[in-house]
Image (cartoon, rainbow, N blue to C red; front, side, top):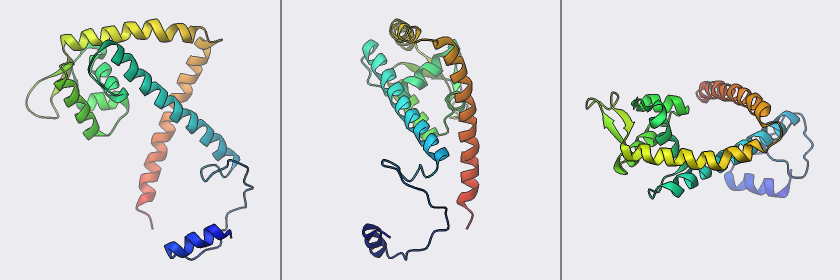
Length: 196
């Protein structure tokens, strides 16, 4: 065992236990999430996914900031656009379902922020579950400006990519499949949390 590992074990009071796992040769740059070749590939994919998600949400915030003075995050922009989708009022549960989100307090915070900004408004009775959200005239104007800037910026870049149409269709199918695998894995993880 390395000296630093022994020191860490002494500090935490844990005794070193022999591992029965098959030895994995570490390569430079390897880490705890990439112990096997499959894990390395998954980690590479997840890193790219993480970076894509961050770039995507930064882009949405920047695009909205170019057409509106209200400071919103990429998450807020997602909620605004989903509320506007189809110009049909939506319950918070529907917004969460469309965005594949279960973090209700964060969704409530985003909707309150958008209501205060005058971009969406509520309708329906006073029951929180039955409250529906719809875009205000200001919200429709902002989302139209956002859509126009998005159309002028991103599609030309994507169309310049070789084979974009075919690749995007295949990628969309794979992302949907992987999304369902992550949901399934989350359910498995929840059941294991309570096991000894």
